[in-house]
Length: 374
Ligand SMILES: *Cc1c(COP(=O)(O)O)cnc(C)c1O
Image (cartoon, rainbow, N blue to C red; front, side, top):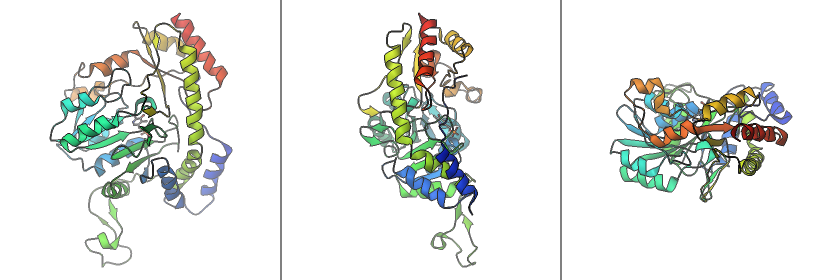
């Protein structure tokens, strides 16, 4: 089965991991700082804290933003459930605002319609790698004194109005799952523009431990002393995986170029196929594509999904609207809330896209899809 996404691992990646395995540090050692520094080169210098997954990154980011019970978080419904689940776990009331009908990114007008003085965070997703409209979202956030969070699990290496993703929102989260653009097997990171948020994020991923004597309440115990001032978790990304991350980030520009070339090939090859629309692109973004999301019209998405899979092509659907998950249904969220997201979901299909996808395999995808739709 041709997958919809997959990692690209070279001998250099393997060697980078093996070198750490032969060394003194398996977990928190020099590779952690090296990976975070390398990552900050992609966020326009905004400092980063590595964690164990994109989900952990979201949990850490909301905690760093100070989310607690009763706070409101406005989120995109066109995302993996973790964007909303991690806020709900901290006691937030998640309010879903609808997406733009074409990009499937959070619609700033829909956000403005639901924000209140209790809104603490507006959580956007750069769907498929195409950045959301951050200038408009920033205005909506400022109006109510909320922070802007970018779930950039899809968009590492993208730019918004020539600004790199990671530098645009107050808090940006990345995922390094194998299907994403850069992988550490499992892994994630938070980029934080505000040093206070960065410090809280770094502490939350390490049990909330305060190690610096100047910040301790009771620093005179001795050199071993550490204190917890706010609860945290162990979300530390080990050295072994950070070494893989450093090695992978060296190829991020090449990954982005290859994905861009494959997207251009899909755009050309699929242009004349009926019953189908192709992903849109705003003039002010330069996406690093994670997905190639097409829309299958005439109620044929399920049929096309099944037939492509039978042909050995691992297409995927991204995503069922987050509030359709029974856990949200149980909390009183109802279908029909975000009609654009639901209409998008009904037609969406992700075609295989990853750096190792050969042009011959891509042609096979195009031919199979065209044969079904013609
Ligand atoms: C993958 C993904 C996540 C979760 O990342 P993990 O590393 O799998 O925990 C969160 N949000 C979005 C939009 C994602 O695509």
